[in-house]
Image 1 (cartoon, one colour):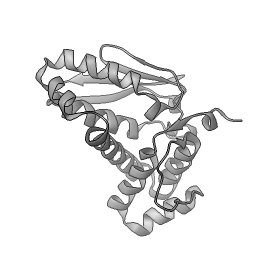
Image 2 (tube, one colour; image 1 turned 120 degrees about the vertical axis):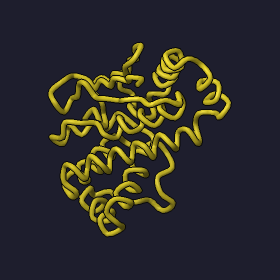
Image 3 (cartoon, rainbow, N blue to C red; image 1 turned 45 degrees about the vertical axis):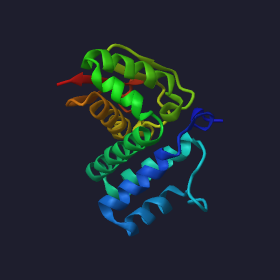
Image 4 (cartoon, rainbow, N blue to C red; image 1 turned 90 degrees about the vertical axis):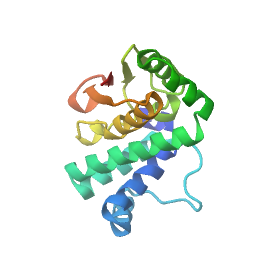
Length: 193
């Protein structure tokens, strides 16, 4: 059994990716991506945690069908959409407001700790570490590195929206290491501007 099958992640990794492809390239292209992935949209859509290997199949199809530049754009948008879903449905408004009142560096530190505790939603059972300005995912189960693509535009998009919205300041999220480039982990640096 592959490591991917052991990981389950939040369904927004699929839902928002298809929405972003549709917004970028239309319904016909969304259908082409879904067909290329071999996945079937369940009646009523995905509701529960999904196997990471399904996310990788969909992301690989996005890359194959759309090409590198459009895939990066679509996956980053999917990450933004997922981040917005998390803000709207998973982080209480009161907590968001309280973090927004704190000095940016302190709020970033608290948000990083919260992300570390909720890592299962975007990293399955992979080990996730957080530091003062970074997130590290060992053997990231939803990295396109498994498809020969050296980037995690979806994760970067999720983290960008969360930090920028909650901290109410410009934030740069950059992937400094990626399993797609042969690293054992994906590392994201969060810099306040």
